Image 1 (cartoon, rainbow, N blue to C red):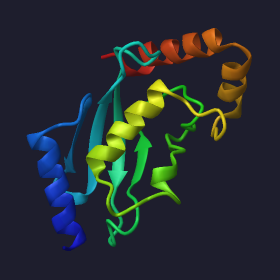
Image 2: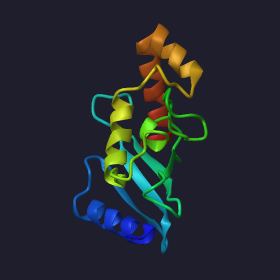
Image 3: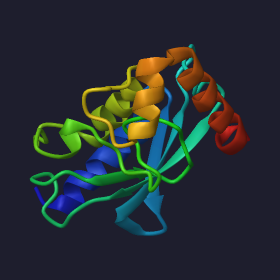
Length: 149
């Protein structure tokens, strides 16, 4: 199966049975460049937020992971100021058995459960470790500034 066929099938699967709190589709007619939307998980500081992500598939997908980054600013220790996401399945733990749908669900899970052992934003990580309530307030404030429509 070619990369284009695989991407087409995965986008069709998402359209037919969207993963909770997520949607995705191509930018124009170029299936290698997509956008996704994630709704902030209930009970998290990101609740009520709608976050846009850019998805760029490599030509040898699914043998290499897609590059996924947040376009909407977000205050999260595992997401840097450029929207890059520190998630092992988007790097050295990638497997061709993973799908875009599964990856989006794992990104939502990361919003609910940040990983202080692998931060991209040290300031946010320190705030989380020293005062989790303050971290959550800052994340909530950013959510309302940038992600509530």
